[in-house]
Image (cartoon, rainbow, N blue to C red):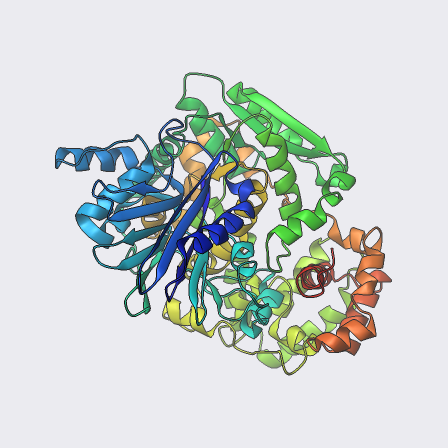
Length: 634
């Protein structure tokens, strides 16, 4: 696991200058690869190109140093991530006469490209961001993995093309501060994160998952291409029993492939369905005790360690349980939030970082249950989607407006409980008769109407999901398959995976997600939807595939989200800081918000007139980012 950086000067520039820039970019991401670094740069009359990386040694500790060159020195690669099927690919290439100097997966990518070109990218099973400079073609290729587990940013300026694993490496290389992107701003205040291809900055982009950039060093033109063609989901006629057996087989194989490491490896074990199954599979595919890690909370309403203990006892694992209180989470708020380099307000980022930090004291790699909900249909919002269809077929639109109005008046939370009143109110405010329901559900911070109210007209943009609807090829999102596809391109890439990557890599821990396997995703997309969600039973086929491995009814136990009591913090220890973010002078100088509306929203929350945790926390995280990046204040 590593982080990569790169720069192309579009005119001749001294090689030493580029090397110096790359070293500075590397220094900013040392947490991603504290073990060693590597730099390549080359100048000619037309341009100067350089690539660099920081390495966290996981595979081939002795000879996997980067950059790696082809035998004739004409092709060079820097790579961030893991290729889980590299041994299979290596054997295939060796049978075709290809020779290798190392045991690293990086060299396998290089040699596969050298023989087959960009076609080879589609054979890679893994999480990655890499760049290949091919002197023979005078081209550079930059690729990102199928789900977007590893980040990759890029930008064009008049003088340079720059790419990096983290935004900070780009921002600190530029000789100017980019403007805020209105698109990125609106996406953030709807979703609590910014999905690819956008960032919070104008003209700086995320490479979309499952895509690669081809950069022509002669013309300085770029084109972006999809790596794997994703077939339109089509239900197969497979029987449930056969599908169940195949599900089990694919999960075991994925866990096995993602367990390859020359360093210590364990699992995050929350006691939920996904992490329990991953831990079980790992325990059954190794001949020694596995290490499992979980966080417990002193506050009983947040604590679920009883579930993880049940699984750990069954697996006879070396179980590590870290009991924390709210102060442990608050201590590193600034460091964690600023490390995202753009506004990000998933409250689970705080405990995820703390779990990663504690886990890193024991192992270097952790398997997680991430992706299980998207792959197998496990979110509550999926069956809420079914409810919208039934509701709108029975309740006339005019009557619904009256019902929603009463809900907003009487179902008001005054504290951060997120209980039944909160859930009913969220549902009723998301109901839509024109196909926008699911887009409202995934908008965790603000609906379009709410955002229009708090945002200055100069910054507000409507219909911000238009391009994502185009990717999906449909305007109305109605089925479970639709919901899962939306989550793959929005919340998985932009939210979940960004959260886990930034918080774990900040502690130099590598996290791997066996459920995020292209074969598994494509298989579940062919299954009848009632195999995934039977009635109101979510992840039906996954649970049935492993039911006999767990105590009776264990897989039916509910599980709370992995969040933090941020609503309370905003009223207490963070109150003074939050109040500084609604000072009239700041709001006027920004010109981003409707000062009167945003001030009332924050004040009502602070005075417990109405709990608006998600909306106010997203505002707090934005202003913290803004203050650090534009006002240069910690």
